[in-house]
Amino acid sequence: MPSISVRRLYQDNQNKLKLAWSAGTAGADNRISVDADKPVLALVGHLNFIHPNQIQVLGIAEVNYLNRMENGEVKASFDELFDLTMALVIVANDLPVPYMLRDYCHTHSVPLLTSQTESPFLMDVLRIYLQRTLATSTVKHGVFLDVFEVGVLITGQSGLGKSELALELISRGHGLVADDAVELYRTGPETLEGRCPPMLKDFLEVRGLGVLNIRAIFGETAVRPKKPLKLIINLALADDAYMQNLDRLSIQSETEGILNVSIRSVTLPVAVGRNLAVLVEAAVRNYILQIRGKDSTKEFLDRHNAMLKEDAANNEDRAD
Image (cartoon, rainbow, N blue to C red):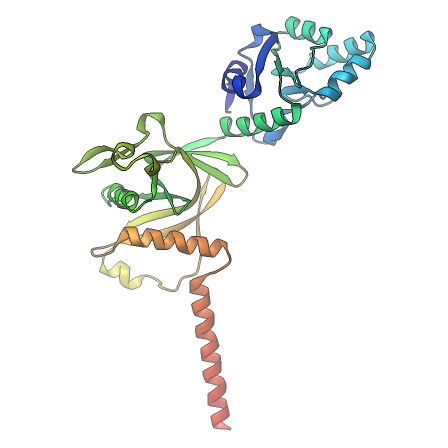
């Protein structure tokens, strides 16, 4: 189960959220984790005594509420609250920390941070941060590219020319995200984000040329740090028999499931004389049209069927 420490969350967001430690430093290694059966948004929320969030945030309303309560009421509520699992408490809006909250956090080793930012903004930032940091992930073999602003993963068995194809696409103005090992993170119910392992960043291995630094050769615009995965193009070795048996008018949309997310996929036969770079660009353009509701193959079949019906009607008229 993916998890991070409070210490890391603090380090990654200290400047953006203007965070400062107030108490509970002994709990700096408390873990914040995601449960696959619960939505990510449940990780962080305003102070809740009934169903505590892992990260409890106090804004103006919550601090005013605590300040209006009698000490005995606050103590009883805190006794119940701190008996449950909490990773972190944050007092936002640059508000003074209620003294009893500081004592409880110190006693129970629950980190207490303060933030100068407003609580809604703070929670939005943390939700996005946790969604990305705690995303379930996997690694796929292939080349991940940005083609016409669409994240495209090119897969296929070794020796089919994936890297050479990627190099040609990059020379045509498209961008490299990752070569060989592509890290895929599920950042939403139907969203996968592809990233490059730090060790492989900017590099593309091409047989005969070795490892190329794409950023150094083609410039800053030739590489991308990450991209949502939208299309998988699988290269398949094709002989004459394969090409002859290929269903040219197939309109079935293939999909591949990765981390329980369905991704549109296309199989491109690799044969002598085929310009794969042009075919990949055409496949991406066709995908863009399809998600806009325009299917070229279906349009052709509809037109063909309409003409057949028209011819049949004309033949009936002649027969009459």
